[in-house]
Length: 492
Image (cartoon, rainbow, N blue to C red; front, top):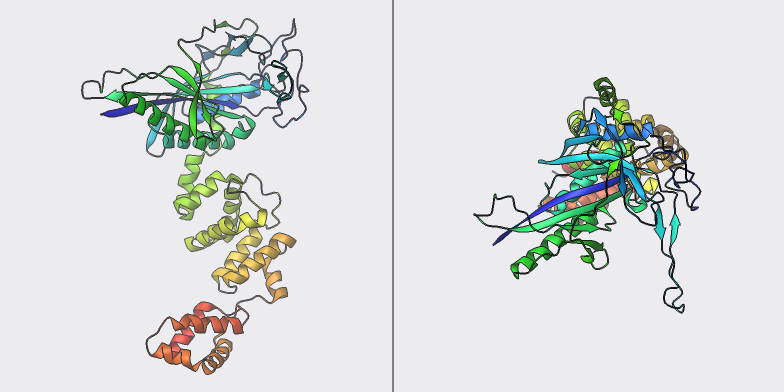
């Protein structure tokens, strides 16, 4: 019997703005001191009134347009009523029936994921639970509330249930994270809580008679997911868990489950028999928002190049492979640097573009102590694009060996000097002069008669040994390609 999963996502993203959503308190995710970025409005003091942050609205509209959404001509805020200790007002200013954006889509590979809606709301505070003294009596534990985050602009994106496995969920979340960063709408760092993923998942039996009846299985919600990769693992685990229960003839409980990263499994948190009644009603202290097409079009025209367009352009303009293109797309600043180098090379020879890409990707991480390839800043790099392009040209012209190039690159990173000056000072230039190399080769042949005899008997791999001897004799400065050609010619 076959089973079919139905998976949708709810993703919350904190927007990168100077101030909070409805007041002038700073929006600073790096603030370590509790309850300093607060004011009468975000603490809900009596008589205080909210004011809409236009920067936050514009950034959300950018996201909506980047995700092919329709922007509402009229939108409004609503009060979502519920009580929780980190919600100062006793309600959250959100959006219900008139979101800012709806009916969008995002392609991940060959799959098109439909986006139901994107709306904006205010974030809650943060609860901290210090570990109580084990010797203290029961009930002596306590919780603390930090309101620095309360009122921060929070985007909520809801997808259609278009996913079928964890891999698709990961790809969508990573692409969305990348788009948020390209737009400078959010850093979207999950470790800081700036990006939060909730999964809604159900599994149903699929038989010929049931295939198209539209009836879904029992929905389970997964929360407390701490990374994008964990979201994928949580989905795959939950598909397996629900399928095994159905195969045993058991029912799936409608509930909220959490992801246990240590045990690599979902765990039950609370039952969810019915939808919560949030008693939505229009926010009386904020006016409706109206958008004319000219405003929307102006925002659309101001969008930067997005990841998908960058991938296509890098592949076409520079003839890079898929792996190189992806690195320069994810590590945007690294890709920007590469483009400046390519401009300095100013050549139609795509081999130079490939050579430059290979050296940046393999040699820059250790130079900059980069963790992976997700670099977001090249401030510590003293190698100008012009100087790096000169290094690539020296390599291409065989004036510098690969080994010597790496040594020169380290000097460039440390001192900020141009490669030609370093090559001259350190005497690292590659020797390609045939007359000079022939003298060294004659000496190597005279000193290794057995290797020469073995080569002439058909053991052609011996040539590598002889090339190595020439390289050693020239302190690595000989051009290995020229040396190999001269040796083969001499030993015929």
